[in-house]
Length: 252
Image (cartoon, rainbow, N blue to C red):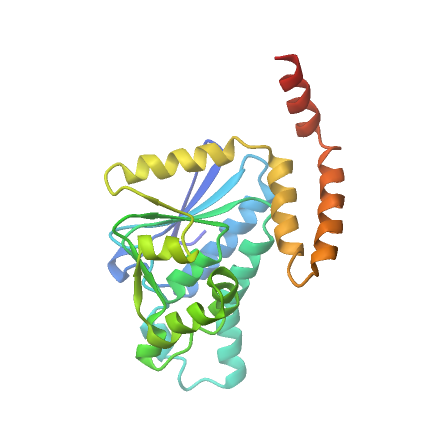
């Protein structure tokens, strides 16, 4: 794994730390390689039950490395599309990973950094953190993020955020659906770790089926969603976790 990402497993939680604090954890090619390797590790390692992404230093992530982005100006359209897809593939990998993914946000999560957080299943934010998509201020478009953002907050609010580039407080982000939980600044790390530990203690099979259902509901009609839910309900009854947990509950 690259030096741009620090990886630690503790209590079933694999934490990937964006490790370029001197650049406010701006995303470069090495960081994308490290994230891809970390997500692959999370999928293959049975010890890993939850994947968490954090930022080193004062901020979660400031977005793309602008020096690297500027260097791409003279590249062909095809080259730049391949470069853009490197981040898009991280979003897709987080979506398809059969384990919960959690962005643990502090400080600022901006542009692609906010996109990285949005790509996770849960976003935990400290009360003083700020999130936003200010690409418009640099003549740029948060194009790949729009798919996730539109689903998270609705089309009109998503357009407002990307067209104005305004930043949201953690409370505003929670109210509009970008953040799952806002935790107090004092004791934030311990409180966030408690959330991660709670997730890691849940049934692996139930969480995997839950995430699969959320993913497969995309684009389905109401009726098809109910039918798919019935199928997943039936599948969940065949798992060892279900049998053990229900038997233990009835015996208590």
